[in-house]
Image (cartoon, rainbow, N blue to C red; front, side, top):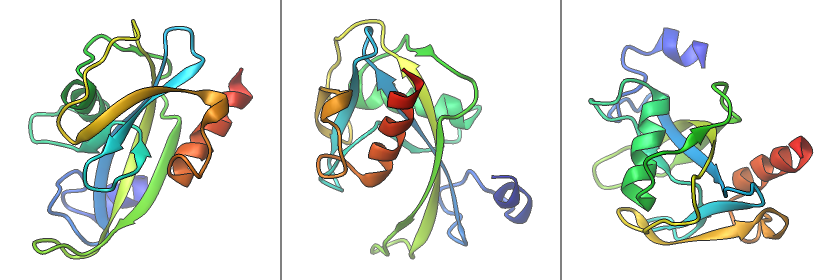
Length: 155
C-alpha cells in the first residue's frame, strides 16, 4: 500500500491506470456473525462483497467502503470490527472501451450489520446472506473465500 501511495500522484483516483488505484470494500457479517452479506455484481456476474471506487467526496478508503454499502445494499449503521483492514486484494481489471487494463488495490474492511435487513440496489443485481460454512471459491471469487477462511480462523 505504501509503495502505491508513494509512487503514484493520485493513488485514489479512478483514472489512475498505471499501475492502478485503490478501491474499498466491506465484508459484512450478520448480527450473529454466522453469515456474510454478498451481492451478485451486475457487471462481473459473481457473488462478491460490496465495494468500489473512491469518489472525490470520500474522506478515506474506509468512507468509500461505507458509501458503497449504502449504495449497494442500503445499510447505514454498520459496526466496524477493526480499524485495520482484514485484507488487501490486488486484481487486474481488463481493458474496456474507455479504460486500459489496470489493477485495483482493494482495501477490505470487516463490519457487522445491525440487522438482517438490506435492499439490493446500484451495482448489485441481487444480495443475500450466505452462511460462512457455505462460501467457497465455486460460489464466490477466490479472494472472498480467502477472507472467509480468515473469518473462520477468528472464531
